[in-house]
Image (cartoon, rainbow, N blue to C red; front, side, top):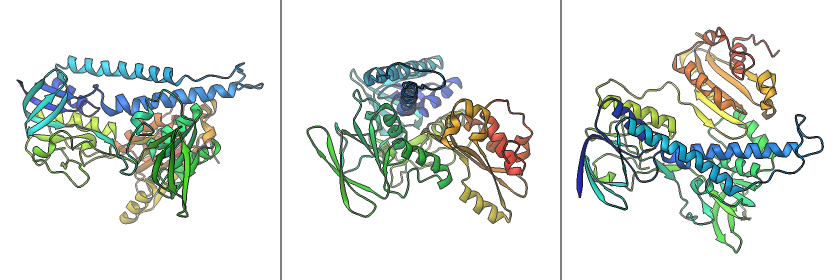
Length: 477
């Protein structure tokens, strides 16, 4: 067995790991990154990017149906219905994934990072054995960055198989299911459920909570709920999946409805999206001496340092941030710079949360309830302003106003500091950067109000929402 030594060893080449490795290489540190599959991780290879590709294709396919009528749409008529070849769609998606995978590998190489293929197994805090199809490699290091990521949660009474699938398998189907049942009405379930509905599947959602997307307030959820109803996506809330029975043509899923009565549905596929858990049980982490909580997250401080000296954990496997790719990337860059001697800590003012449903949802900073409580504790009032996309010219030209979307701003009454921004609407995710920047810079309402926003753009909706919070929006009365 050959031995390699380095200053920084990164486990996992997802959006946290590969960013940490690239930044370490840029800072002149001898760096090795280990990945058991393709560089890019869950987000790039089997999550965020491929799902958004399929969502985009689904919307394009669905939009063609509008033109397939005698009247057409926007003056455009298509003489025959569009046809879907799901296998070709998946191949197109894989082309995007492969391109990005090669891009990540190229960036690692440019930063002089050694990419080792295989699965790492730690034998102590600073030593691991990497196994692949050709050999075993022993790696000894000064610093370890754990970026193992996460995996879908499997229900014990509904284990994954050919017909009970996770989001990973849902992005690799070669045949369109006639009926897709989604267990879990969170962002992953709704994103994929809506996409498959637009592609032509019948879709049913089973959700245990009182509503889908329960982490968002009712006003923000409402346009999505209306879209689900309009597009005949059946939603069963306060309902619990109980198990499946395999049949000749698929499965029967049993569940209890809101009245506690047992029901059943015939389905081709059952997509389980009840959450994700840290991937902390399969790489010998327990032999490293790092502390983990009951859920399996590695416990870290505000620098992503574990209780073991020079062992760090970032992204989904760590217990100090949301399970989001952009959190992992931020933490990866930070840890590399800390190892190089810079003073950094993870203390963001805001972390944008985006749901790529139709319409999309963006939430940055405090929710209305959080902002209300915060202002109450300070002895001040909460200012709220809202601007509908239906009053935005660019939204009308993109038909983004049809979703019933809006931009909402929350601010302190005493000094006009912006506390939170929420928005819902088609393509509204592209405004998330401006929202986050405003909060991170501690912007006041007047800062945004005094900033010229180009016309015609969707960003004018944010400007108008700010003016509405100040009490003098121009384009609504």
